[in-house]
Length: 255
Image 1 (cartoon, helix red, strand yellow):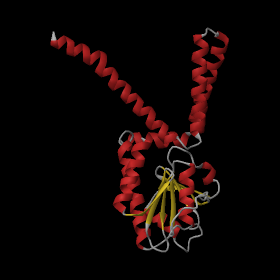
Image 2 (cartoon, rainbow, N blue to C red; image 1 turned 45 degrees about the vertical axis):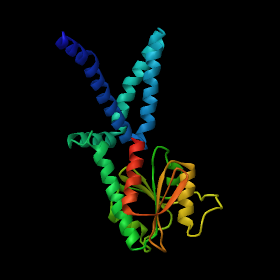
Image 3 (tube, rainbow, N blue to C red; image 1 turned 90 degrees about the vertical axis):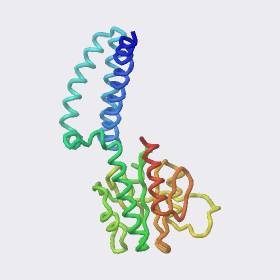
Image 4 (cartoon, rainbow, N blue to C red; image 1 turned 30 degrees about the vertical axis):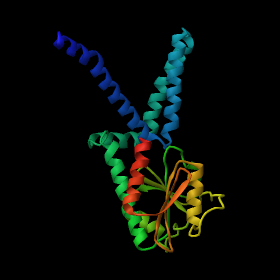
């Protein structure tokens, strides 16, 4: 009897649960890979059409349902043609066995890369302002700067913020593992109760953290000290260890 019960439980509860978790993980990963790109709006529109087609079929609106189904077929082909680079990148990650592993590996790589870059900037007292995009898009601020769209690396960040670089003024915006733009203008906080030691970069970091859920890193040009503005607050004088802890918390919340 126990064996029968166990088989019934596995077949009717455990396996369906695993099935749902896997599908949810795949859908989530696909969403994360295309969020913030031009593809996301098209995918949202396609999802809306699919829902409308299902709903019209449910209401027995046969003509409307037929038209929407024809539109879906055309739209799917159009998506494949228009977004070949995104699809190619996604399939490459699948082929490399990184698709599900990136849930953790990509975040660890980003954290280590950022920490390494910030540590070097801090040691050499090179001022920096780095905004890490979270759930709220930073498109409005990206448009104020110069579009870069390059793979995140310590060397590239260091090159951007060197005084000799034409991009060193303003903020760098990072989306996942890419530097999207540099020399971006961020809003300054309107708070007047800030203690001495806050420079323009700190004011801009806090201003963005008050308006969005971005994680903003500041390296002081005068002292080399590291600060983080997040969730409307700013913390100054962080160690690299503390910075990594904060970044880990950010990615856990974002997941």
